Image 1 (tube, rainbow, N blue to C red):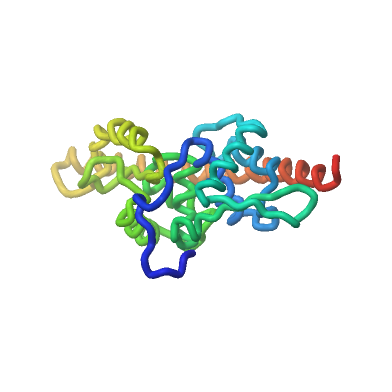
Image 2: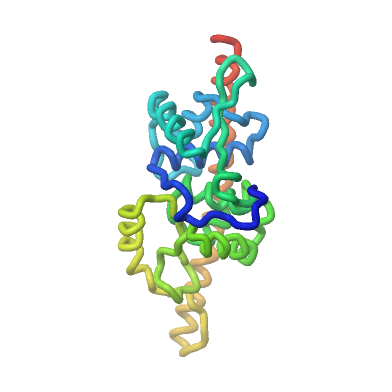
Length: 248
């Protein structure tokens, strides 16, 4: 993280297209979850971009796609080519310094880069695999608030909503951000609000609480499945890297 007292706002930082966002997200993720295989080879980056777990949308990038994207990211001072770490070149991100972010902040931003807009609850559960200090929603808010103040994170659902708040990173171009705001502009029904009211209201609140609990359990199961899929994909990446190192 940058040690300066002033951290850049979104106006001071580059915007990234879809491929650049995916490659950056992968480099951040793998640097935190599999540090033994970071910096990353080109083959590892391609596999990481195209993996089916913890990605939305699922893509199918080829070598040219990722190579060209790395050139763009290096021009934006967001990625670095590392020489001398084996027979093939490797790459790492430079966004701790470029964006002026902490370990927890970079984890949150990486999840948003990899999966796009999502609820705060989903974001906390997914970010925890990279940053174990995000133990609850209060911990997440302590990370989100400074990012919002700098414009790096934006809220897409209407103001005043307490649950189901949808957030996104702000590294999209302006037209993409406007399209996202329009998409979520009508998402203002806070149906899970369990404040007092009539019997019908309380029944609806109880039903909402049950739905929330069910969503949580489903999300936990998804996290387990995603983790297993990611381990398989990691083994595939390790095999590719080993073949490259051996000149196969």
